[in-house]
Image (cartoon, rainbow, N blue to C red; front, side, top):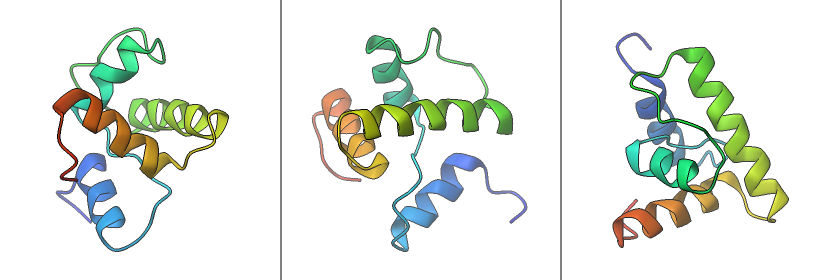
Length: 85
């Protein structure tokens, strides 16, 4: 859909039950940087960069035995102290 970015599209997909996507907001990116999953937090996310970072998070989630939606929520909670997603 035109006018919807990857973060918003991922949010929509998760809200309708699709669990295989990450919502890469600033909280998640910050936590990924602290965990060493990414070197820097990009100022903008192109399609290519969003997909690269999402893939890193998917691999990390698989490595620790969680779904990407679960790890996304967990990282969000670590950064914000809230489980409102």
